[in-house]
Length: 358
Image (cartoon, rainbow, N blue to C red; front, top):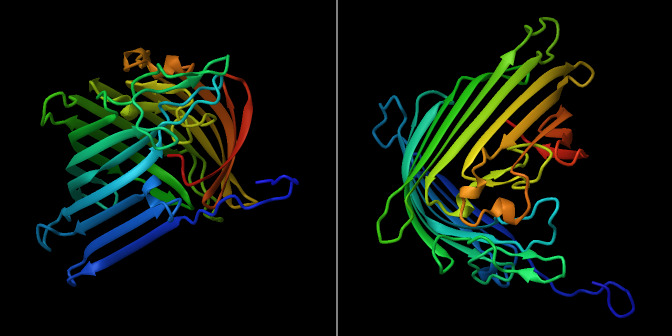
C-alpha cells in the first residue's frame, strides 16, 4: 500500500497455500488415502483453514464383483462465499456471507460401465454462516442509498444461532453413453441426484432436494474420412430441480454462472426453491485450428419460487429471478473463449473459461 510519500510500502505478509498427501496402495490392496489442508494465511490458519481426509476402499465386496463396488469415507471442512446472499446488478457493495461446512460423509459407489455409476451415502454437516470478519451472522445485509447498512435481510440459517446441524441421505445416479469423435463429445448423459434429511433431534430441518440433468450431444453430419476435424454437433441441455420442506437458504438453487446461465455471475439471477434451465449449443468445426467454434442460447428461471424461500433473498437483493443469454465462442484445448450477451441488461461480456460447459 502507498505510504505518506506515495511510495509502495509492505503492510503485511500473508503466506498461504495448500498441502496435499495421497497414498494409492495401502496394505498393497489398492486402498487409497487422500488428505489436503489449505489456508490463505499460514500464520493465522484459524481464519479460513480448510481440510479434507478421504479414504477409498475399492472392490469392498470382493475381486469378482462385476459392479466394482467401493466404499468411500471423508472428513471435511470448507469455507465458501455464498452466492445466495449477494446483490444483483442494481445493488452493489453487499457484505459477503461465508458458509463454513464441517462434517463427515460415507458412501457406497457402484460402476456399471466406464462412465455410468451410482452412489448412496449419508452426510452429517455442521453449517455456520459468518461475515467477512469471521463473526457468526444470522441474517444477510445490504447497503442503503444513504450509506447505512441494513441488517434485516433474509435469515442465513434455519436456527437463530447461525449454526445448523444436518443429517441427510444422498443418492446419485449417472447414465453416460458419450464418446469422443475427433475431440468432440457424442452421445447422451443423464444425472439424477436426491437428498433426504433425517430428523435426528428436535427442530432439525426436514427437506427433500432433488435435481435432474439431461444432456444430448447429437452429431449432425458424419465425420470426415480425409481429416481429423470434429463433426458438427448440436447440444441440447435441460436441468430441473425442486426443494420440498424447510431447507436452509444457503442450500437453495443459485441461478446464473458459467455452469448455469452464461453471461451472469454465480447467483446473479437469484436463489430459488425450484429451478429450470435450458440450453442449445451448435458446435461447428474450424479447419485452420482443427478445433470447433460454437453458438449458444441459454435460459434460466426460478419458476416463481423465490418468494417461498425464507426472507426471499432474490427480492431483498434486487435480482431478476430469471434471464437468458446468447453468444459465440471458440474452443482452444482446455480453454473456452466466449462472448455472451444477457437479456436483462442487453450488454455483452467476454470470458475465458477452463473445462467444458456440459
